[in-house]
Length: 115
Length: 114
Image 1 (tube, helix red, strand yellow):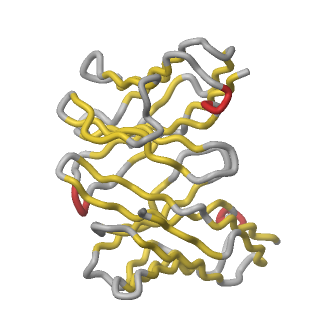
Image 2 (cartoon, chains in turn brown, blue):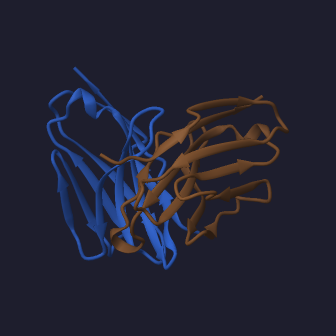
Image 3 (tube, one colour):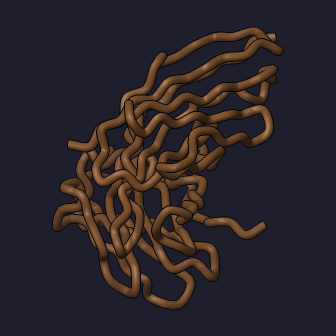
């Protein structure tokens, strides 16, 4: 069964370092998303991406964050200069459709620990 | 501000018993309501999606209800199994042309004991 895959599963980094989280969405999907979940808290929307551009972003997604779809398969989230509060589980998701039947499929997540 | 509130925060049930989880939301414009199951440290997995016109939807031992007038939903788990131990998250979607924006509830953590 097709699935969303994410790498790395866990990354530890020093504050101020750049981090790139990678995602391979399901191949025929058109809409891509990043969400994050700080330990013990709700899942929060970061950004949605469609037609090679950001379609929506939350207030969390500030200038330190960027997304890219460098080729036909990968979808990356870059954090330019990590802060302690960026420590969280980051989930990539994709869907083939928007709208009422737009089932989102989530990856297993990348756990980021900022020291 | 769009919000999704769930209750209880956690519950413990004995294997084989039933339980019902509650979700209240204030999300506009409403597109659909989803229930996800999230095992610890894993990504959410969809259980059901309900649109405005649907009152009930089942997926095996999971039955979700939706009252769009009162903006409430419930998830009923029948004959619980140990593998049902997880967080159950209510998620409400606002549809925009370029994709769904999801508002997540805090989840209800269910522990099924033998």
